[in-house]
Structure formats: C-alpha cells, structure tokens
Image (cartoon, rainbow, N blue to C red; front, side):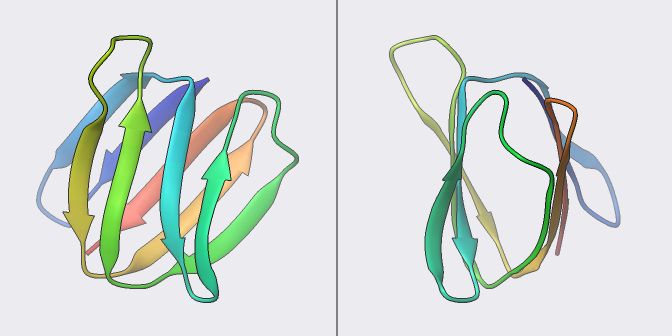
Length: 78
C-alpha cells in the first residue's frame, strides 16, 4: 500500500509500506494492505512503518488526521 506523511512544511515520507502503526485517540492501531476505508484523528505519539526491509522506521507526530482509501494511506500530521 502507498503511504504519505505530510506536515504543514514538508513531506516526511512517501512510499510503499506493508504496515503502519498509528497513535489513535483511543490507543494504537495498525493499518495493513487492503484495509477498509477509514478516517481517524490522531494524538501525539510515534508512527511506526514497516516497508519490507528488516528495520522499522519511526516518526514522532504531535497529532493529526489519517485517511485510508483504496490501499492508500494519507497522514496529515503536525
């Protein structure tokens, strides 16, 4: 699936991933390929990405919104 992490000043990440873990308002949740459509608010925390390599990547955010649709994840982060 395709992931884009966008902040007000730049694009932090853009690429294909196999897993995204996000800090939702009610706790952590994961998005995998073929996930159902979703829109959710996010709180401050750490985003975990697995892109097929052996090392996960982490990005700290101060909140935001995520939209999942048609195997594309768009994360608008602060």
